[in-house]
Image 1 (cartoon, protein in one colour):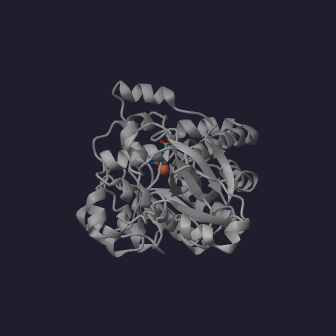
Image 2: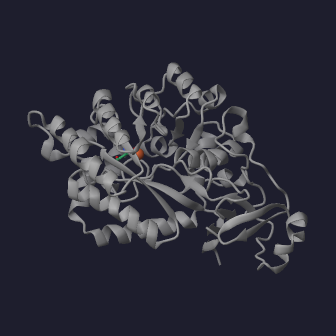
Image 3: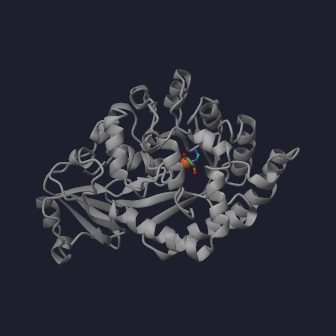
Length: 408
Ligand code: NIG
Ligand code: FE
């Protein structure tokens, strides 16, 4: 499965994933030098001198691009999972100081070394599941020191281990405890974000994107807009957590600001679908959240695809709503719950996700000139990737031509 063809996929094109049977890939210096049928690639002069690696008829995909994760966090929230199963809602738990604020408390108490060690473990698991590029958001620090610490860790981890990390500043996740309940607290926190943190993040090259959680209990449309505009003015492209638990109008605002992506979208309105279809803003769907929280309402994937929007899929790996780093599991949910076909789900988790991270020229498909980022599955048919749900069938993962996971 090459998912070849430049640019993001809209509508029917989402299911064209460029299958080559009995194919071969020539890799030079971590970059794809040729791809095609084995007969053709093996005939090339350079192939004759190349070291051969036989994947034994297994299914080869571009490495997954996970365009929405909250990689750095200090601990799970398994205790809240238990409460949720007994009937407490995600928002009730958050109102009682649990939820995101619970993770903030835990992160502030952790050392940078502890956070890094934990994240490294997760990155190894991502590689084992066939993911080669991940976006990572801050947002469990919510004070200057802790947010900058998270973003610096993104940078260090990107340099020190094979997977590529795309850093996003999510200082506007929620208003932290110390600003709550005091007059003008939210305004003061927004000032800290817009006047101090965003300039510092941008000046030090600590993030490429700026995100906000636009939702009741988090930030309003006008608050979100001010944060995203401040970020954009400093070169941080907007992304938005939009319409996850209610329809706030965040998608419309995101499109107006030229957001790279609007994510979640469970409560999207028909007008939002039309606007997304006309825009370059990616609709990133995160069905892991609905599954984990036991919610019945999933994003309108079919309507988005049929209208021509650019649909991507991501894990939203985080301790509160989606504790999974398995993209294959997300593909299973996309197929069974969002009614996407396996081919559509694969393109959504590779080339369209890469486009949302502005990396579609380098990753997201198996094409001449792109990075040799591959995921190989111990299967006979690509449709078996989502078909075997909750089973990791990834056999080998390659990042920039280096094997970073190989099942023995
Ligand atoms: O993408 N919705 C906001 N942020 C995360 C959840 C964060 C948390 O609960 O810790 C999300 O679902
Ligand atoms: Fe998120």
